[in-house]
Amino acid sequence: QVQLVESGGGLVQSGGSLRLSCAASGSILSINDMSWYRQAPGKQRDEVAAITSGGSTNYADSVKGRFTISRDNAKNMVYLQMDTLKPEDTAVYYCNAEVTYRWFGRDLTSAKWGQGTEVTVSS
Image 1: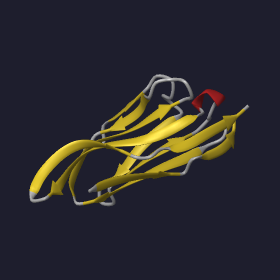
Image 2: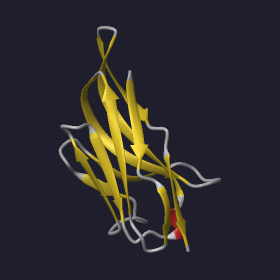
Image 3: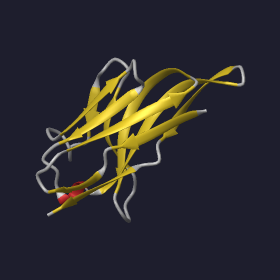
Image 4: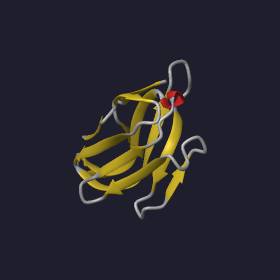
């Protein structure tokens, strides 16, 4: 079994910063792309930032220049540094990872999701 657990969400004032963390655990053989998504109330879940195993990054236009995604491959962790936060960044943030893992003697690859961490930015 593979689990992703996010942490670091909370309430922050507009212009403030938060750092989200996501830890992957279980019978992990390797992790390919890792991403952060967010879902605001009544809206669809959208990708915010992504990072490959080699460290290449991609960002949604709405967060470019304000958010930074990074990862620690040795610890199976991904981070999202969020600066200059705005009220429209308020959402539940989810970690996603493409994981290759051992399952009853077989190597499987699938996308895994965390349970989400809530970020609220007050104006």
